[in-house]
Length: 232
Ligand code: 13P
Image 1 (cartoon, rainbow, N blue to C red):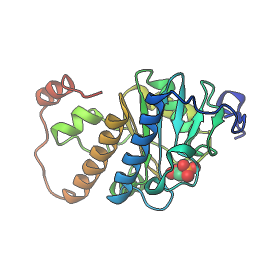
Image 2: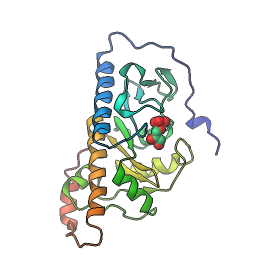
Image 3: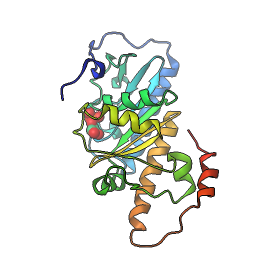
């Protein structure tokens, strides 16, 4: 499918320099770099896989394409305008369309994290669409991810063909598995999005550890109570 104008990421080059006094943006850059390094150090991403974005003013700061989350440079993060066109920094992640779909689905989201973390990616290779691939067995699964994590069909990295499906899936909750690809989560802050990505990976690991066993499920009442304790 060709890239539609709606999904395009018009590139205006590396014009508009960062406002010198923009302390909030500078802190956000540093936090993206620190959390990226933390995820990388613990094996949540390898090579140059994975990407992070966070709302900054009326735009978005995003990790550059082909950049290792372990070795990000705060000055080289991509700054995108409200139309997701590049204002400054390196070329953004090829997954800008995925991130945009999440922000459109979830106006309260302040950050989006996409990882190829090992267990989530393994589960995304086994899971079928519409399946409850990841049982909600623990309180923090429900509190961070909701009781149902949808599985979105496979799409080529960087393709815009899944835009509408991702947007629709993410309207019902902050997390999804991308078929044969990994995880996608949103958070009300950068830290919340990273915490949710870590929780999703832990839940995927539990699904493998418990495979073939008979874990106790949370009861509907317990799930309802935890839904009211959701960390958004
Ligand atoms: P980028 O290097 O363009 O961010 O892509 C990495 C990735 O995770 C693709 O799904």
